[in-house]
Length: 241
Figure 1 (cartoon, rainbow, N blue to C red):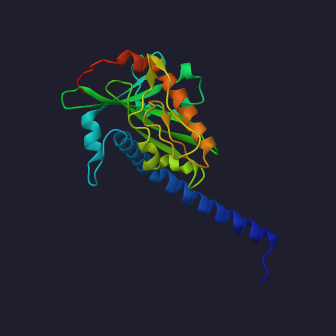
Figure 2 (cartoon, helix red, strand yellow):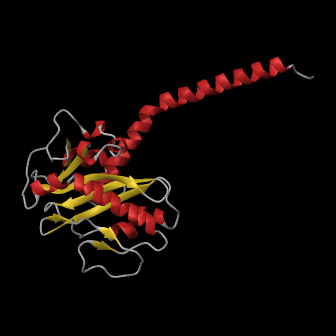
Figure 3 (cartoon, one colour):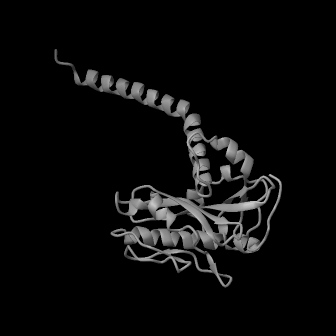
């Protein structure tokens, strides 16, 4: 039986309202769990930048016991009343470097001494945003590890910034030289030995622009954290959690 145009329009509208309502309900009801999963993934990445996590490790227990998180400004001063959970790094990236709020995650041993400092970084790769964490040792200069992620870099090329192979290359590199911020740079080309250079990292074949994005991201954000790092270089910072 042929339906009238009015019937088709009303039927389509009803289906749209019902389906839209179901999707909205699902989005609202699942948001707390989504937020919890995002928070857990972030804690896992922060810890993975400084220690080797094993299957079955209690991420929350390790994080709550050994990480002190706070927010600083570009002068390296702690911003009272602000917590890293309230800071959206992607939104801060749109501000000028001097205006950004900067989360810091200090990994401390059982005595309260800082072993590593983990700092979020954010930037733009070849196709979309890239982000992650860089961790330095207690000298606030030597890189302990990095964790990078991306929104749309090319699989097998720029997307390799997420791989252990690439991230391992940053370990042991230095941020400063003679007191000046130098940062760390992925070089063009791949297969070269930069083990004797504290600031250079072997490149990624076919991913020059993504590598350039990583270099810009590190230089930009390490400059934001420069005052905090310089305040602590050579320190034996210790405090209770």
